[in-house]
Figure 1: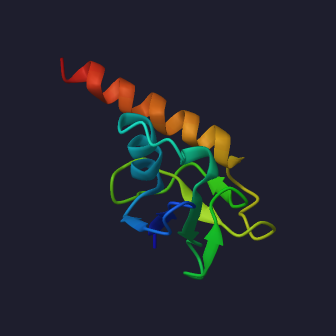
Figure 2: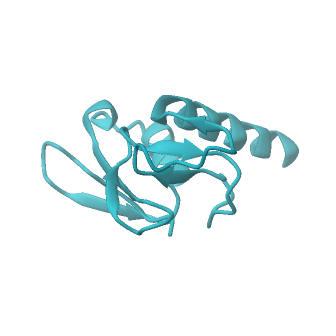
Amino acid sequence: MYAAQTTDPITGRTYYFDDIGCVVLWFVEDEIEWADKAIIWVTDVKTGEWVNAREAKWSTISITPMAFGFAAHKAGTEPKDTEIIGYDEMAKRSIALEERKKGLNR
């Protein structure tokens, strides 16, 4: 369960993704002007419940659809035996991972 969706706060249009890393990269690569104000929902990896991506806690070692490796957990339910990061760090790492991938493909 790694679904993600983001809504343009101006138009209300919603966009759907299968991995949070794809949302982050779309914001950057397509220069989405409203990215900082975007409403982003992701599914909690354990329950499937929709949670606010910016409030979620992110584990870093999951096997995800597009191989970014980040799983969302509703705050307070995250596992205790693994690295847990916040949204900003997850976004930063998603961008860095994509840059490394592009470097390997040159």
